[in-house]
Amino acid sequence: MNVSVPSFKLTYSTMFNPPEALHAHFDAAVRTIKGHLGAEHAMWIGGHNERAVQRFEVKSPIDHRMVLGRFQAGAPEHAAAAVAAARDAFRDWSRTPWRDRVALLRRAVQLIEERIFYLGAVLALEVGKNRMEALGEVQETADLIAYYCNRMEESDGYVRAMARDPLPGFSSENTSVLKPHGAWLVIAPFNFPFALAGGPAAAALVAGNTVVLKTASATPWSGRLFADVLRDAGLPSGVFNYVTGPGNSLGEALVQHDQVAGMTFTGSYEVGMHLYRRFASGRWPRPCIAEMGGKNAAIVSRHAVIDDAALGVMRSAFGLSGQKCSACARVYVEHSVFNDFVAALHRMTITVTTGDPTLREHWMGPVINGAAVARFEDAVAQVRSLRDAGAIVAGGERIDHGDLAHGFFCAPTIVRAPVDHALWQRELFAPLVLVAPVDTIDQGLALANANDYGLTAGFYGSGEECERFFEEIDAGVCYANRPQGATTGSWPGYQPFAGWKASGSTGKSAGSHYYLPQYLREQSQTRVRNDGAAPVSDQCM
Image (cartoon, rainbow, N blue to C red):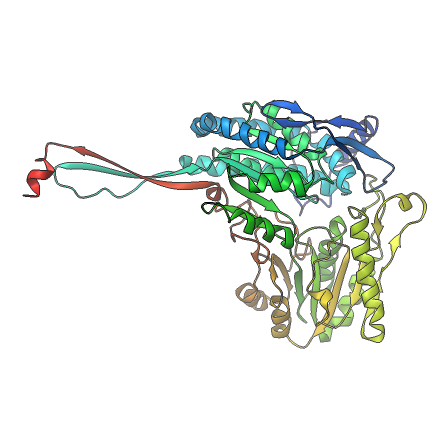
């Protein structure tokens, strides 16, 4: 199902004008997959398919009558088996020349790109993404893996010669070598189940670690397909392991296992901090890369191009139904252009087509489950209870007519509420954006920073104002005057992605120069050769 489109480079910024062949291939992939739904999928441990006593069904958020597949409810013994397999494979994998590891991962990149339409169609059905978001995630995964392979190559395996000791009669060579840790745990979220499994796993693997991947229970299919890619690329048995099951049993068993050497987690702040603290409570500190969400703000100056600002906010607020950790959730607008901005945002929002995202005409799909709908409806109810102090500018309802009644669809929603209301602080993961006027850019910056999260932020205004924004904003990923997305749309090698404050534990970005070394630890090596000097004991007399 591969298609050659040499003049089209798919990224989240370029997805708005794809070639017609892309649509045809995606539609064909959806038809193929819908003809083979409901199969059972095994875990992948030590190079073998493994099944559990219990299984669970995964249904599409588009239509919960659609059973996508049956997956294994892994138990603590499967966690132990996966870690043991990874530990057993670590010695040989870590001693495999890094160039050979890179070659295998580059083969995986090739396979992902060959399967892009099948993988994208699965993501659309499993997560509820529109076709361009789904295909974009698959291509992003390929680009993340390729990026980490390139960094390993450019760094020559992270072996660096250091200064030589000035020892008369001796030759002293000092070397810094970055070495892998061991069995690395990756816990992936539901919203980017392919990229946020594949990116961290690839970084760990290229560095010489072995991997155990646990997927979110809502989106295990894409994890199995990633395991298939690595199997078909030729990774040795046990180097990569894939498990599925409840977080409170299987997940806890993985986190508590004393043979897990490092972990990458992407998800909520509450779960991330729990895992971070749990992971640090062992016999010694272990590396934990935790990306933990956001409540991302955009600031609009009176000097902004209003339509660019409104378009960027709309795309970032309602892309993937607001279920991106980088989604635009808060907008502070200088009062003199507030009404113009809200009118433009309203005009664009009411044109958003919501429905089955596998269909070309629908830009926004469902939220992931009933709990997400409940969060959305609770937030709307809070705004309505404010009466004159708040307002639903657009949307505000669940969409449950016709076939959409069998899915989890919410209208894209713009609300006004006092800036001290709790909704300005809490991550919702729903298609709802808050807007408020501010007197000055200073006030907008202060309000944007007055939040525990610090993942992404956007600004629209003059060049001088933009530089001030970059200087003062407390966020790891920042955009200025970007109509393609106010707070979303990073791409490997273009926009490094990591959060500050409650949004991340390391401040080092995926898709950047500083990410891969987090999966390695430094060893200093000193080699001394006696070139004919007197014995050291004689020199000391």
